[in-house]
Amino acid sequence: MEKVLIHLEDFTMAYTDIPVIWDMDLDIYEGSITAIIGPNGAGKSTLMKGILGRYAGLGLFKRVNASEKEKALEALKKMKMEDFASRQISELSGGQKQRVFIARAIAQNALIYFMDEPLAGVDKKTENIIIETMREFKKEGKTIIAVHH
Image 1 (cartoon, rainbow, N blue to C red):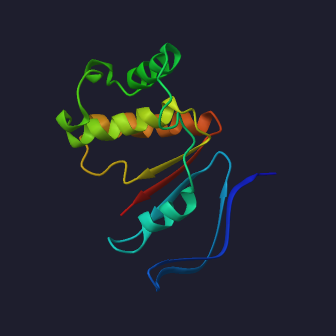
Image 2 (cartoon, rainbow, N blue to C red; image 1 turned 30 degrees about the vertical axis):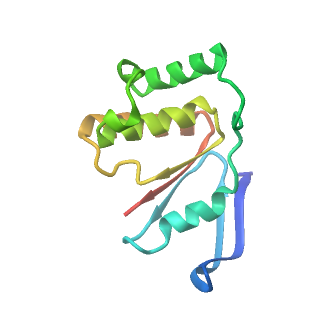
Image 3 (cartoon, helix red, strand yellow; image 1 turned 90 degrees about the vertical axis):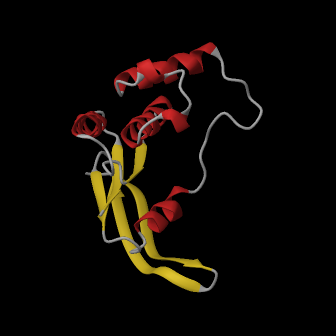
């Protein structure tokens, strides 16, 4: 039987007092790829923000050790971005940034990957790398939730 990882029931989100998502029910299953599709302004990213909660991580003052650096480098290699490891994020193209963001998620070894328009503004090479990575995640039993319009 499939395991439900995320369950929303009568889910509502609002900015100030204006509801933008209301009375939504949603189940996301372990090992699935779920697409959240709709036009700009439909609330896709808002829904994803509502699901996320907080990130676990290093914390504000903890130093990065050699093991953490190695995980990051391996993730960059997986996304074919190791040659850009010493560059600032502001120096990268849109597609390169997208690959770095996915590498960041890989380094965290998450069970669930939230991707907000992972194919927006990327070239064919990057698109292929991202799609293949998503397929690998699924084979590993990881769950992907992707927003796309």
